[in-house]
Length: 512
Ligand code: AHR
Image (cartoon, rainbow, N blue to C red; front, top):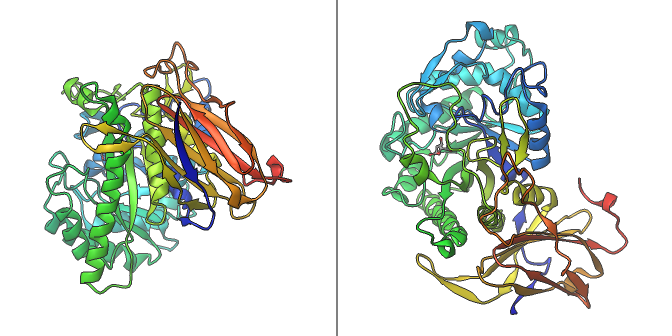
């Protein structure tokens, strides 16, 4: 069996883990909202029409912050349509996904829903077809306690208390020609700066996100970030990154190495942001909000001809069924995000329900976990405190796009209160297992807590309506600690989480 070596030492840290890294994304798209989180008449629906079975799964997933309401959808959205008595709300054409938007779910409903799933709300503004005034109106309506018309309207509509939304995205993917209101980096940078300044004049404590590139292969990647930040550096806190990965042409080795691309993406954006910092002689540092990331078989979607001119309500769009391999890639992307926890301070798995999602539902039927649910839920639960940098020595393999890539990648966290450590590992070999030995002597006396692996003899296995629990994590019984050496066998195409608990502590001494 092949071997890999890792040294774990709590002295080598990346930085504190921001819980916002375990965010997700709900867009008015397909069946994410309608027939997803919201289905009045479903046996599990609460008085507001929200499915409680879905809420239970969202809580189990451990999502901390949710970006809303788009995505491409937001660039044609009028937030006013989604407030006030539901029976008076207009039905609109959603140009992004060629669907009918009934506006039965809007700001109030979604804010209530996020509260029930114990997540923070992150709002995206329409800067595609709207501007400063509409952004200010929405901010006043959302956050301000005053005698003003919009604050009063919010109270009349059922929420005397402001929603107090901290994190706001200044538009969505405006570098993309597909985006309503697509514009040049110069034009976007100017409007984003004006909107940000105006918003801060109303509420100085906001955290604002400027749009970065829609992905690293955009022709304007790099120059877009530079120009946008030159205009907005003092006005914003974050620049966004978006990235979706898929297996193409049966090239699984390349797909399994997707985190190499994400890594290069993050490092290039940090370099660009820091070079603008130097150029402007600024004291501020701009962080990254990786507010859309996932595996998405977008080629299949574009070839499917599913965007029609019939304007359907809640069509089945982007309903990818995820395999074990997809879940392993999702786990590896999470490892990559954690490794950059010092600069990536928020992340959103796109999306949450039905649309390229970890949770699937059937109208009037069940809700279940896709394969990708597991690495996310386990990482969100076990990763605590401070992210640790590991020294990894392992064999590599040749890829068609990224050169040689290491077979094993890993990251760890340490809970600053309890001293409990979690190690997350991805194994990219398609052929055979690798034994990993982790030197944990610097932790002192620890015992093994949970040891979970996601793998399958069939890496294409999925969870479906018919077989909802076909795939799931299983205890990795090979894991053991002896004389400060933790060894574990990683099966081919697998993702693993190991927990190390200081001797003497019990499970209830650990962070929830
Ligand atoms: O998540 C699906 C779409 O991907 C979003 O609407 C858009 O922002 C991105 O291109």
